[in-house]
Length: 444
Ligand code: HEM
Image (cartoon, rainbow, N blue to C red; front, side, top):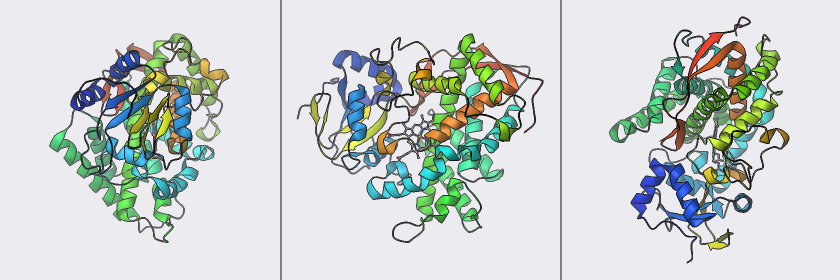
């Protein structure tokens, strides 16, 4: 079997490099081995995954290979098996992200209408109210870091708008366990305990709410409770639990890190900050929430796309698939039982795809929408992030609401990135900012 070239280090060493310094590792491999390279990562340390995996992970970096991967049948390029290796399968066996085939399609069908772009208006008012409730508590006299604030807003939004939690002791416990799991320094017994606690909280939420009348509620939890599977049965409590935990974990770190990166990128360049602020004032300034114009923010949307291109919130790779049959990629026939993934860190910085790739230039997305094969922060194909429209909308609403309600100034810029599990966060808890209320500040 001829695999694309790769480093000669042993499996343990390669796993360490990918976990500790993924972006530098990808840069080095790309420089040494070119457009397609092989890492020996085994089953990512997850012994409990029972597959015939050969332990090789082939990373692609060119748009034409991304197109081939995303167009390959999901029966051949399987995301569920690969995600079980990546995220483990012991503590939480199911959830859409770990499923393949018909089981995956059935759940995906439930999610699609709920996360459909046209439904985003319904989420706007609660998201705005959440942002303003949190922002009211921020210091007006001292500088503070943005990442923890974005984490608090993001948990609040997901837990209430998607999981159907309301303000309660259980919600407070959920926030504290999720924040704890977000800290990659918490490992071993403590992490295991936090996982178990999170699980218990979700089970308690299900037990309390499942039997109530959910017919007029629109959150994902209520929809999943009312879902009937092809066998005519409802989702079991375990299946429901696995979906809710998956949504929390998939939506929390990704969105909160992306938001912290957004403030870092926007506040570092006065021209960008001024245009964001102008659009925010036009969309929100002084309007009542129902009349805000979040669909008229092309520059802000381009800034979000450019930020996701350059500052990945997921640590350097997406679109992870396990091959059940050989696949031709980058001039090689990649054997069955290999994992293939996109090194987005390289794809997004390719000078032949993005001229001046290291410059922050949102204008590049103003005239052309990002192409599915060149821009993949949300993955793609049939496994494209189901929360993509929700996350894009939430980020726009956060930026427009905050930049319209207050003047935000940079106190301390970000000095690089740090890896937290699968996420890349801005160092030092994100940019440190000082804020001042504007006079038209309105109550939500
Ligand atoms: C900036 C924010 C986000 C980023 C960068 C992001 C990124 C991703 C990526 C890379 C994938 C894998 C796609 C693939 O394998 O091709 C994914 C899948 C997924 N994401 Fe997101 N995500 C974000 C926000 C969210 C939110 C807010 C939710 C929901 C609350 C969410 C729920 C999911 C789910 C359920 C999947 C699995 C889809 C499937 O397997 O069919 N994500 N996301």
